Image 1 (cartoon, rainbow, N blue to C red):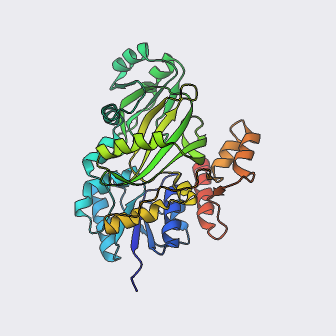
Image 2: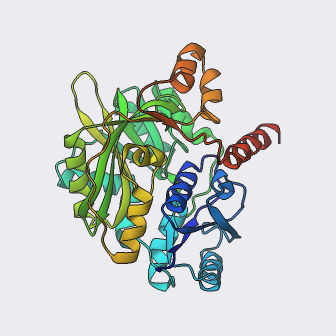
Image 3: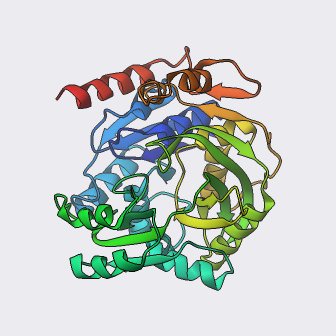
Length: 383
């Protein structure tokens, strides 16, 4: 009998660790032995009944060498077969260290990871691949920002040159709003974020659509598209209620980009689609497992298991068939935030009313992650 593969999910404490929880459940149900490592063992993914062990380690942004030493100790001491990164910090760190890690991974080269993480370099790659992008400028100080503010269209968007999620992202209705960015308290750049340079982009109206892809050295092994029905923060945040779509044009654009990068592993290619013109613009490449991962699993594409297979065997079964009408929502804590957003009736319908092909992460057979998430949210509010 073949022993169960031993998988370590490498994460860090963040307010929203949905992909770690989704991965732990999918891998555990698929027969893998699952452990989680984090700088603080308080995230919801740590508390799933599918997680066998929990290990503390150094945050890679604080001390990359310390992270490497801790991770190596965990891997060798627990016979770990595969390490899967769960966020940008651990993806960048593992890509840089992958030749020194005594376990299998499913990662592209460090050069590809850093290119995908740099939004201006991603835009240049998109232009070479024939993929549309918003007008974009970079400011490294107040003088450059003043020049950009004089010619940028409004509304416009600003965000760190390197970063992820909604961290540092602001929609500006006026030049005065844009210029006020540098007046805010400075934030220190680190392994995952570049707060010293500001990216300013044309605002694309419409919805955020994702083309989520799993690649083997640039060749597509699985893909689907989704749209964000509800986001937090509204308009430009993470998807808190999402549904699958069937948009071959977005998959084609995403696959061209990832082929050029010789991408190996999972990636979420994010677009904004203008409802009036149908124009689809690349926003960014999230070169890792994505927040809406549970939607893929519910729709029939088990990305965590396929990624595990890719790491162990060097390839995985191709999967392109999925439910084009699946929907997934995360009531805790996002429904509570949505109810306080000024649209309580719409939020109640979106997050609580029954609907066909609709799933959520609330599992009464695995309740501890939700209790942990509530506890963590209360600590952030009260202290």
